[in-house]
Length: 152
Image (cartoon, rainbow, N blue to C red; front, side, top):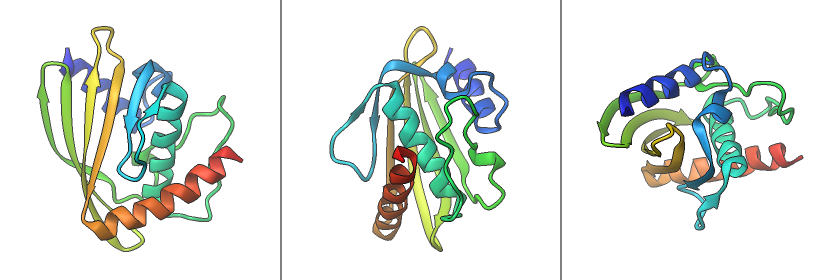
């Protein structure tokens, strides 16, 4: 089942999954950010953080972030300036660990997305870990700006 779930995740990143994050994220999903101490609970917050991350990896600070829920958000692979890419995938049971590399403000970013899926094929936990420290600091600043734009 994890293989099918991961296919959906990759389709989403390409902008080819009907329903996008709404199709993937469970209502009670818990999101763990590398730049926020407390867990973010619920589908809406998880989507907000993932969309902000997409905007951050885009690298274009001036680009307006869509607040219109009826329009699909930009996806990482559709962002021409994005250097985001997954370099490794490890799947077992109902979990996947996806190592990624990117660049934010000229700083190399290396991290992992740890996804846990339920039996219904929905993500119930999404954890992001990033290194090195300079990348964490750059992500913290950029994510803060993106989240403020999204909140309006």
